[in-house]
Amino acid sequence: MERRRCLASATPSSQTGSMALTISQPAHAIMLAAAHRAAPHEACGLLLGSASRIEVAVPTTNVAPDPARHFEIDPAALIAAHRAARDGSGAQVIGYFHSHPNGLARPSATDEASAARDGRVWVIVAATNDGADAITCWRDGADGFEPLSYCVVQG
Image (cartoon, rainbow, N blue to C red; front, side, top):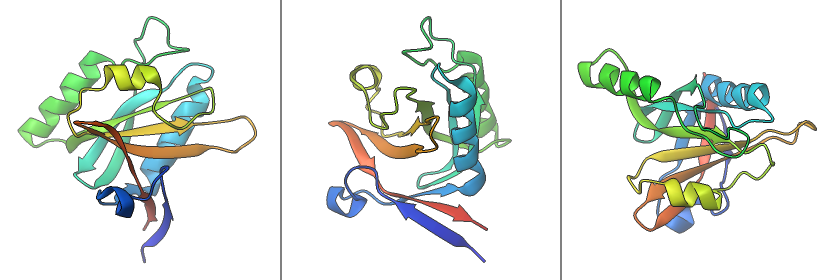
C-alpha cells in the first residue's frame, strides 16, 4: 500500500500551474542524510526518475572551491549519469539537489545566478542540528525558480 505525505514549497503548485512532484521515501531520506553528513558544507547530488517523480537521489562530491557557500556537482558523476540514461542503463536526470547549511530552504542569489533555466527540478535541503529539517522543490523555469509542491511516497 502506498502512503503519501504531501508538502508545499512556498506556494502550492495549484497556484503556479505546476504539477506536484512525487519523491520516493528513500530519495527523501538520502537527501537529508547527505545534507547532515556534509554540514557545515553544502551537499549536492543528482535526481533521477521521470518528469514528475524522483525515484533516486544520488549524492555526489561537491567540487566547488568554497563548498561552505556554494555547490558544484562533480562533472564526472553528471556525465556518467547522462550516459547511463542515454544508453538505457540508468534513469533520466531530472534535476539536482543541494543543501543550505544556513537553514534557508529557498533559492539563494547564487542559485538564481547559476541556474540554467532548463526546466529541471532543484531540491533544496535545509538540515539543522535541532531536527527542524526542511526540503523545498523548485522548477528552474525560463523566468526563474517556480515553487513545486511535493509528496513523499512510501510503498
